[in-house]
Image 1 (cartoon, one colour):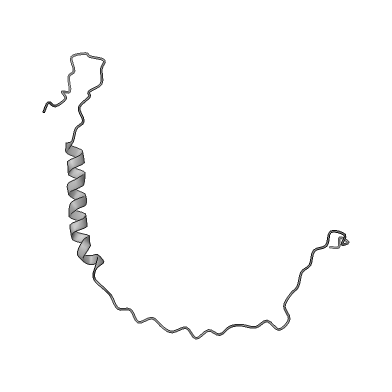
Image 2 (cartoon, one colour):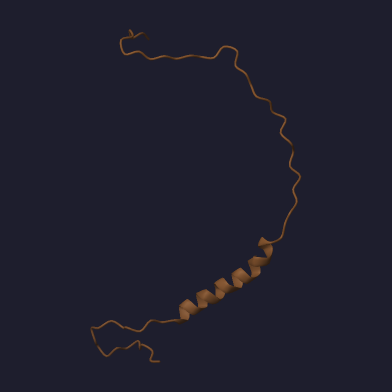
Length: 75
């Protein structure tokens, strides 16, 4: 496999080879992160949550709003 050189001899063509080293480095770091975090995802933590004591509220006099096109304007 050939590698690109820093000095291309004054050529105006771009370097066509892809540098794989950064890609391999990122993949290895991600692999290590997944290996470390995978056991943590299967660990269960029991939490005692309180029970809700709320009741449904009832409104004795609900507010009713109606709109009519021919209503008089008052402020």
